[in-house]
Length: 109
Length: 397
Image 1: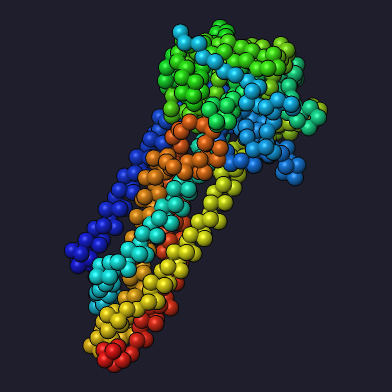
Image 2 (image 1 turned 45 degrees about the horizontal axis):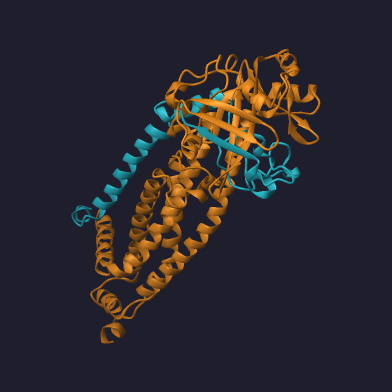
């Protein structure tokens, strides 16, 4: 075993393990643990105040209506759950190209 | 004790062999690290979304009520608020109005969400100011004012104090003064948001005063959510109910599907690496063959040669898997640059934003099993082939 340490093989494994643990603890503290993570607390404050917006990123097709999946399978019915896949397009106006339907202009102060 | 020393010596010998034949070792190690990194960043990113959704469950309204008109979600009457409040265990009912704004930025299709909130009645979290990068959140008195998600603000170069004019060819229009911008950390929930008062949203989407998009129902105890949902669904016609749990399940299912598609592709990669390991292990060079022959001539048993060869595979797979998991974790923490569009679904239509990354024991254990077991198993036959080499033949060759 001492020989393995001398050959630095175990040291390399140990180094990877220490780096991994440090990153894990950092990530847990910063990103995912509600009690410790201010980031998670901020995200949940938004969820609580807005009453649960859908995550505005999702796999295409998961939003499409599929009658066999029941009434709960359509994410586009939730704010932020919109999908641009043609099957999921719920806001297109017939006869109009959707990119011309809305405009947003910023007037600088 | 001597047995342990024997195995330890074989391990050292295996390690030294890997160093001596470093070209061959690297030929296995590099693809293995790449494959394990790909598996781990996908697993950790998916885990992050799922964990965030699970945490969010306790902050979501217990039941969201929506009206169904001819099978599609429509406007809901505010007259239902009083009726739902009469249901036992219902603490509060809050109306919400929202809709989509499809826009084209350059050549990219984007969708933004205009949401109107009833600030007077909502549960405004005390921690919400942390999530505002510039300006402030809406107050109950604010009219024709908006808080923007960072995605909207960046896309249109809008800042606090600017005015945004939204107009559509159907005759709907609105002008809002930007009073606040959400920060980068909460972009996962707010990047596409234009948040206004519920009256402004009603005005923009042409809702009448007694209509809303949905009703948020808060129970006296979350355990009563299903009871309330059943009661609402049974009592009113053309109404559907979404419990907090069903919303969380949707996120889990959606990312599970994406993860599943990726896993299918990843398995093909793993099989390719296994074939490479097989090819590299089965090919015994003249030098190596002579070396094994000498070892056997000086008294090494066939079992010891096989054990040493298996240890070589074990060391490679443990090292490659560890380095791969570490690389994948770092890549996930960096937001999977370059391929975030695949990892995040439709993320290509939104500006980049940090994603939650979750690395738990079960994911890491599964990755180690996937990385170590197949490679060790596939090395068994090449190890046996190396072990049965005839010393006389190989030394004379």
